[in-house]
Structures are given as C-alpha cells and as structure tokens.
Image 1 (tube, helix red, strand yellow):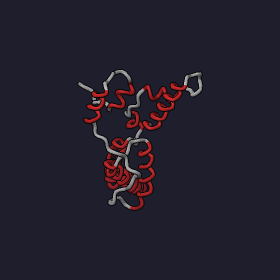
Image 2: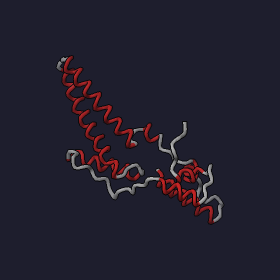
Image 3: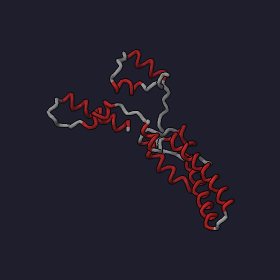
Image 4: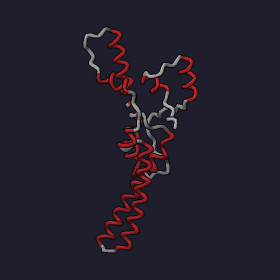
Length: 172
C-alpha cells in the first residue's frame, strides 16, 4: 500500500529525492495551505467559562504550527467533552459513595462515552503524546538545530546553520 504524500518542504528537507524547481512548484500548487490565524478565537457556542483555557491551549498549538481556523470546532468539542466527562465523573463518584450500583454503572458508561470523545478530539489536534509522535520532522532539521555555532566553519556554513535552526524552530 502506498504511503501518504508528504509535503514538499518535508521531501526537500529530507534530501533523499531531488526535485527540480518546476517539480517543486507543481507539487506546491497541489498542496492545500491554510494561513494560521493571528490568535486562537473560541467558537461562539463554547461556554464562556472554557474560553480562557481554549485561548491558552490554542496559542500553544498555534506556536507549534498545529492550529488553523479550520480546527476551531474540534478544539472546542475537546473542551466541551472534557467538561462533560468531569461532570459525569463527579456524578459517578457520588453514586458510588451512595452505594447505588445501577446509577454508578449508568454514569460510568456516560463518563466513558465523553472520555472517548475527548480523546478522539485530542488525537485530531495533536494534544496527546501519540498524536505528536506522528508529526514528521525531517532529520536534517533536527541535526541542524543541534550543530554548534562556532566550530571553525566559514561564514556561509554559519549562515546556513542559522537558517536551518530557524526552520527547525518554525517546524516545532
């Protein structure tokens, strides 16, 4: 089975495949690019008490290059599902303290449903460890960020390393 097509910048950075300028331009024309917003604005339907946390996590995702306006509803659904999961958890705990097994079982099922919803949204947004591990960072960019600045290299090499380190910071 064929692998998913990688972005042109990643193919060029990996350096395993040489692309002419025409091939690069043709590939870039086929790619979808959504400009990142200035800031993460929560959707109107999200309860006001979740707006502050939404903006906080949204800014982190924005800085990591993992957020666009298209992701606004998914991130909002994550916070809503997490809030409902917490509420169901409290009610299930209360039912357990009251020794009401039937009610505890119902709330535990509801809690499980909301947890799955929150986890699914978190995976889609890169909020979990496994989702972040799927983000591909080319090896060339990783090595450039670790390279020393003044190791006797000429001016061109130092400028190239600075450019690669800036690209690494932008990719992470």
